[in-house]
Image 1 (cartoon, rainbow, N blue to C red):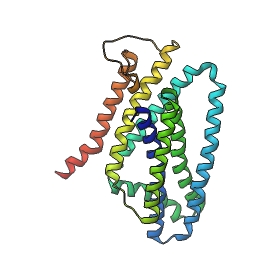
Image 2: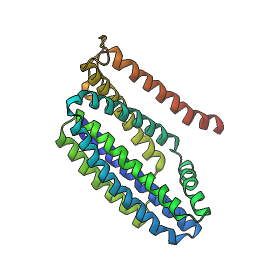
Image 3: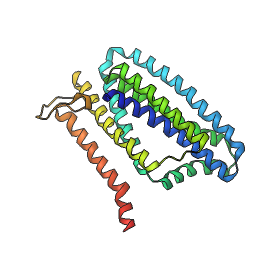
Image 4: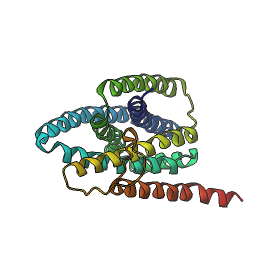
Length: 260
């Protein structure tokens, strides 16, 4: 399997499944507290999020067409932004690796709206939870399409959608319980690699137009992983790795100490 396929599969699988997990968790919480009438609002919310996401996708493509003359700059900035968001998402996923933390997160989002009997607030909670995943997917795929071939990305996208559709059916219709710890950690690892790759590619694009300098160093070049032999790409990537180590220590170090 190619890097492009794995990257595409991971993005659509992770983003789509997270949206499904959010909706399923809210359904479950509403069942738990007996608020069955609010389920219709949830359906309206995630459908509206998908529709607005489709409009966002069309708008993003139109924007890229308008900025064709400055393609390298747009590609560079988009990849760097995608890298930072990917990193943030991966760190967030690690912090929610325990099932009780995920449950607390969902309940905190819904409890306020339900307590006020404010269905508009509940609609907005679900809408923005799903739309965030759609928006991130659009951004990440724009970055992927700049680096890899369309065929591999399309194949990964389709296989990912099929996999998510099957798992979603099992979760929503057959009450399948997902091991959140394994899922969160496994997808976060791939997101970290993608984040480093996007960052290296984005800086390289800015180097090509002279916005960022180029200082060559003696390290191997793996363009498919976003690793290039320059100080300007290597130092930010090392900072990202250091931030990852710090985030892992904060997420798991405290748990280890508390269990002793």
